[in-house]
Length: 249
Image (cartoon, rainbow, N blue to C red; front, side):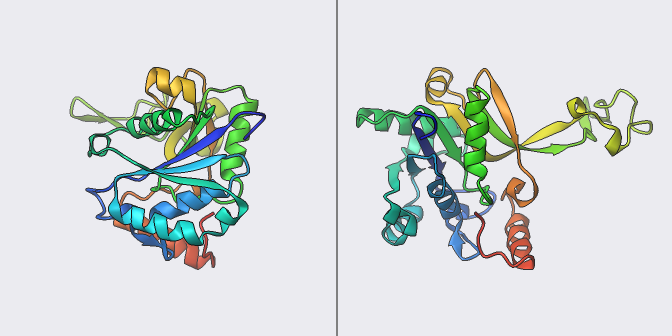
């Protein structure tokens, strides 16, 4: 809970993955991928309840086993599995469908929350107090939603009508500014998928995680890494080993 507002965390981990087979329960640093998000959620001082929304049988086996053993649960942290309907578990299903299903499921059981925190397993690195700091920025800034993103200069190309164009910087490619010359307002931000915070009422009203007054929470280094390919698994694992890390939270 933050300033009297109840916080629900939902980890969306459906079965099936076209890019990487069995991605959500594949081990990373000897821990199933989705479980890193569970531990990050349980590590938060503000999150009141953590839900895993999934239709994956293997994830359910891991969940049941780890729930009995996890040290966080000795501190009376609330952790629950919600079976995700197959209709919300297709390749084209949006995360919002699973989030709304979970919120409605809890409401039917007389549980309601003010703030929703959506954690995606494909962003396993959440070092330090990342979740709590993002919740503080969300709440204290008076926002109705928040997303994590990485900051970059606008050296971006687009393909339009079959032609590659550099139309971000009005000076053109060869006369563009040096990196250190860009002003704050000229930077662009890449949604890295690590943390989404949303006012629960707005999610239900709009069916979207991003509300009318969102904010960006900047993440840096490994906190901004996502797993979309086999290379990403190797990258995170080898980076962690290189700096002697055995934990991703």
